[in-house]
Length: 403
Image 1 (cartoon, rainbow, N blue to C red):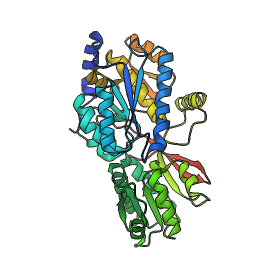
Image 2: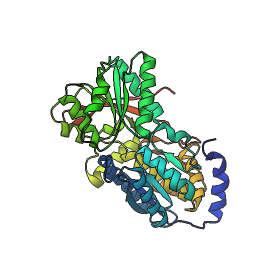
Image 3: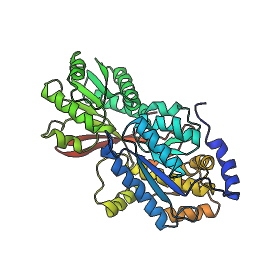
Image 4: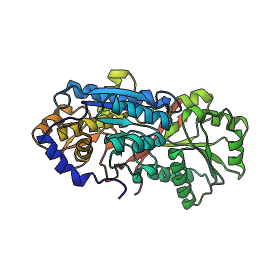
């Protein structure tokens, strides 16, 4: 089995630790986000999502009788910097859990080098690589976003249904890019389309004209760009300037208003994009209202609500376990995220606290939807089809993938 089963041990460990609440870590969680680098467009807003959850929790009673504290570290969107930042959070800040990282490659490196060996639960709010499902992580890595094994299928279907029959892919050379490019290719070809070229690109280059020319050689009608805004805008601009590509297909990593603002004009108005999305409901409505009150309008970016939910889940697991000890918190995560139990949602910390203190089970239904962890820490999910209109991000529809 790729990781330690979470459900089988949860009841035994949590029950034992409620009776003996010795704490190995502080009542503190860490935020491991890209505040610089390719994914910086999402790091600061994910940080706000986490902070909002902590503010609500502390206003309604805190965790284990204390205010929940936070510490943040910058991954710089690179694996080594992410590992260094995670080590600081665990060894210096003494956090009992980590929200992040965002890039799949960073999350995988952190899980291998830090959290799985040091016994600190880690919940990524954005890492979608299928590799994570079977990662040897000792059961310490979870995520509040669905795997790209699902997103790739959705994107392949949408591209075919839009009328494309020949699409090349250009993907960032990491676990996220490769995994999503492979699942897109498999589904698009299954439907009857062709992928003339599927090419990796390296971050930080001034020119991608060679990669773009290779992608066009097979006569592709459109380019599926699986990457991040910083280099993605360079690729789009050069593709347009060379007259190689006028039609673009995007994934969650490119869903940022900074992209069309930097490109200018209406070149991206007919683009097709996908992203994990929250179902409409009371939880999502509360989150949006609370975020607006705290920070202003909710940006049209992914992974803010999933960071918020990850913070709630870690806090609930600590409270359920009666401890901040890593193994106990890890095993309690599935108990507070999965049925059965009293359903609690965003902004309902006081009700959750009361239920747990009374010995009841709770089942958190989050701002980003239900987070029913399976034995690999994966969650189900729905997706959103989106596009750009001028400099705005527009929502087309929500899609529930067939499993």
